[in-house]
Length: 317
Ligand code: ADP
Image 1 (cartoon, rainbow, N blue to C red):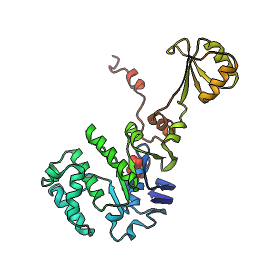
Image 2: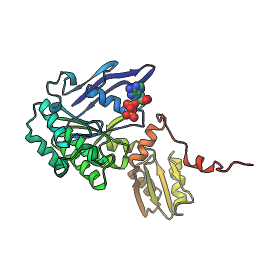
Image 3: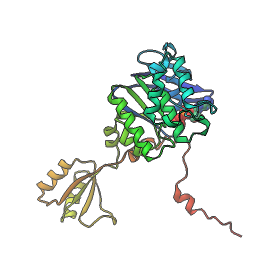
Image 4: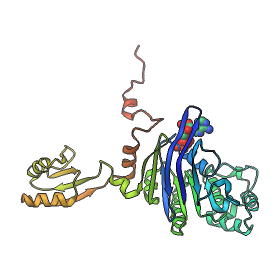
């Protein structure tokens, strides 16, 4: 369990993390999301004692990280996969970490096996690809068999097979009752991996809720209705204050309705004797829900593509 109580971090005038209070529960994968500069890395660094809070505190299993006698046994973290000496081999890097944390050397072979690096464990880390470096970072996080695991962008550089492997690993760690906090910018991947979401923007919490709840909050969740009496049903739906869409890109017998359950729409159609040929939910994706949630918090946004494409590329003479 990770508990943060009014956690705040300022760098000069800049408040990177503002008054964050949250709990990351065991037995689940919690996705940690937010635009660039939202404060995710700063929060993760404070969890593992690499940064000191300006005020507030964050505890791991009820203790400050600095108070853990053998930190790797309490918390495993992948924060920066390049954080090891390029001239050393993966095996010697992990052996060094194990020794300094009272972890038996036999554990090194186990984690190398888990991450699939056994065959290249004697090679210089400097010769590793980005994906292999990530696997080594994950091995280091697993080394102390900790109850709490933090992964900052763990699937960076992994191929599709590796991405699936990382997802299954995180899900199995959570299923063993561990606390798993993982940040990622890949929303479709996160939707497959996380049970719960902690979304921050400009250092503040925007959502702390189960995945389903975050997606249900999107205005893009809508019902699709097909009826031969689309006009009549549209009139009734609007009379009940519901937003109805009937655009050129829809079939003539198709309506999109926002803000009502399928049951409400079905009952309304029935009470007006309107036959319904299809009634289904068009569910928003996590990406869509996330974009809506963070729309006001994007610090380094790119201009819309349409804006770029409309800009004349050749100067007028
Ligand atoms: P994220 O990981 O969500 O992208 P960060 O935690 O890296 O966000 O950064 C949060 C904010 O704090 C950003 O505006 C960033 O520029 C600033 N920041 C992070 N680290 C430092 C630092 N060491 N010194 C000054 N500003 C920092």
